[in-house]
Each structure stands twice: as C-alpha cells, then as structure tokens.
Length: 389
Image (cartoon, rainbow, N blue to C red; front, side, top):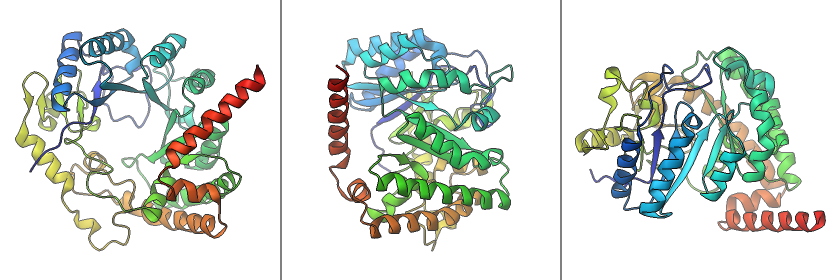
C-alpha cells in the first residue's frame, strides 16, 4: 500500500485538564506533558513527513494549560519553517484570555471551541474537577472569541441525558453568534430506542429552524444536516474523506509516540502501546501504519448493500475502534442514527429546493460559494464599521 504524506497532526501537549467531561475519551487526567525537546523533534518530523507543509492542532487534555509551551513551539516552527506549517487548537475555552487571542491573531492560529449548547445542557456533562459547571466561564469569553474569529466552530457532543436540549441548545449557539455548529453523538454512550425517538423530534424542530434561517438569507452550518445534504447535492463520500487515520491524519502523544488518531492515545501507557505506529525520534513503524490504513479503508460488511453507503456522514474508523474495539465493526447506534436522520435531511433539502431558496442553491451547488460568501461577509463588516465611525 502506498501511504500519503501527512497533512494534519494533533499534538497532545498534556494529559491533564481542568474539566472532567463525562464523555471524555482521553483517559485519566494526569500531569504528563510534552517536553520542549519532544515538541521540537515533532515539528521537524512533521516537516519531513509532510514535505514542509501541514496543519498542527494543539490538543490534550486541555492545551491551554501549556500555553507557554505553545508559544515556544510556534516560535521554533516560524524560525525554521516560516508559515508553511499552520497551527490550530481545540480548547474548552475556560482559559482563553486576551493574551491568547492576540497571540492567535498574530500567528493566524484559529481554534475550535467545545461548548455543548445552552447552560443546562452544557453543565450536565462539562464540569470542572470540583463538580461545578463550566458554561458561565466560557460564555463570558464568547464575545471576544467571535470578534477574533467570527467563523469559530462550536463543537457539541450529545449524550442520552442531553437529548431533550438538542434543538434549544443548537438554536442557543446560533443566537450566541456562532455560525458553525459541529455536533455529534457520543457513540459509546448507553443509547436506547427511546433516546433516538426523542432525538428525532429534536432534529425535526431544528429542520424547521434551518429552513427558516436559509429562507431569510441567514448563513449557518449545522453538521448533522449540512454534511448529509452535501452527499445529496454533490457527491458521496469516498474512503478517507471523513477519516484518514494513520495516513494523512495522525496524532502524537506527549511522549512523542505516534498514533493513528487522538482517540487511540488514551494515557499513552503500556496498555495503549499496541495502538502506536511509531515515534518522532525513530519515525513511523511502516508496517503498523499500513495495517491501520488498510483496515480503515477495508469495505465494511455492515455497509454492504446499504442504501446510505457513501452518505453516512458519521462513519469513522476511530469511532468504530472506540465503540467496538475494531476499525471494521460499526456500533449499531451509527446505523440506527443515520437511518433515522437521513429522511429528515432529505425532506429538508427537497423543501429548500422546491421553494427555490437562493442561499441553499448557492451553498450546495455553487463551487465558488465559500469565497464569495467570505467576500460578502467582509463587505458587510466593513459597512458596519463605516457606520459606527
């Protein structure tokens, strides 16, 4: 098998975190952090494996606990590789301050923010180590975050106990000013049929909200709908489009060990070593890496003959492994969820098409939409600034 160059790498800077989210897959929170020497080796390794150009995402734990290290990593990379290596971050937002935002602005380092919806929904599962909710700490920072980057993505996870808040929570995030809401299920949670029936009603409510928003020309992205509409309006997903673990996408633990994805790192101790595909000091274990890629690309028996093959937007080898222990075995909840959601999405898309909603047609059928939309936003922002002046 011919392997690809690395395009995306997640760096687990620390195994520690100031939150104790109930669905976290990162394992026990421990004071294990990446050294500066390992970080520098990692940047050099990635520059070599990516032909000098890749995107590095700071991950954890909570990467903001290691902000001084982030500064030094970026400085090292800029000095040696200029801006050919880009930096991103995934953060819970509780430690974001103006200093960080100024640093991110200066280095064009964007980040995704974990926020699960409204306060009740969020605080049920995203709590501090002392048990207190984290919503208020994040909410007071959202305005500054969106001023820094209006396109900041809100990442939301749904578990059975928060299903009743899904529609209200998503609307809350859009009302907050987020334009992009990436929402997914915790597929390892104890889902029951009643939970999916309730979730179906939540999606139905959101489909009406989505229709009204696009009809009024309001731009928004809601991943459960958008990612599936794309396969209806454009093309089905191919192998590696959604999950290219161990190939173009890898993860690197604080120790310097290389893993197929962040979900394989855990606490990076002896019990996780079988997941490793190398080390930044010695390079890839090519045979292990090739095995993971081949397994992830292998046709899945559960998908044979399925009418939704190529449209299932949540299929991911990492999710399979975490939920079933196998890259090739899909957890039943994925299939049940897709079969429930897809008719809602298709009905929504058909309705938008029949009503000749201009924003819908541009968004999904005009290849130039991302650029033209951004130019429009810049012009609107400029006019607003002129009025304010």
